[in-house]
Length: 274
Image 1 (cartoon, one colour):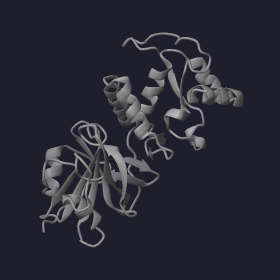
Image 2 (cartoon, rainbow, N blue to C red; image 1 turned 90 degrees about the vertical axis):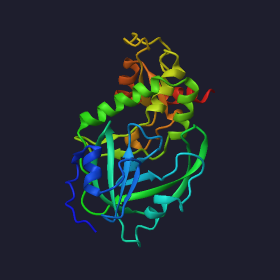
Image 3 (cartoon, rainbow, N blue to C red; image 1 turned 60 degrees about the vertical axis):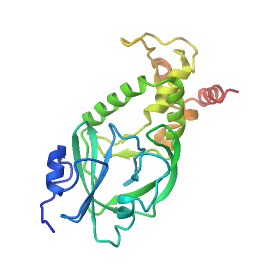
């Protein structure tokens, strides 16, 4: 077995550097290396179809297999599932910018894998296996806030290319009661961009509270509205279609200053269609 020095958590590598260090394949989200007795897993937030997310200090990582139902016996799903007993060290990288792999650290299973429904690469609903993973030691490296902001901009551009129906489907599938967080310069809730995009499209350019048109149109031709969680995330609110409204800046500020119960009831009524 090849001995090697691990990078410091938070270190960025390109794909060649990752491949050479771990002596693994240059492709895929789960890369087994017999030479270093490791399994490198990559959570790609830029290009992956998978719905990986952090909840507190646990990464819920989607297994291997892009088409149809996934199997726990398939290739590296089995390696990861058996990693508590097979002696294989599991190392996590995350991708926040194209071709840049950020080393997070060595991880271990934090619980039993479970199944949930996600779309495959063809857009068809299927069952996947999700692996709850936690750092083996230490704390999660803080990701620069500007990196997360730039990632959000990339995801927003991707969202604008999709149809209303595609955005709504993604919003309903990825809306969650437990909202992911990660350490940056400040803690940032990892809100679903699909939920936000759906709220803006549903409003058709009209504030869902005051019912007035958006105050202006952006350079890309879309009305300027801001998204707001009726029950705030910090108070345990869900990042879902039903809890996310599109508001003009004035109403958005009003909701944050007053958080008026009558306004919340009115928004809930309008968003529920009653």
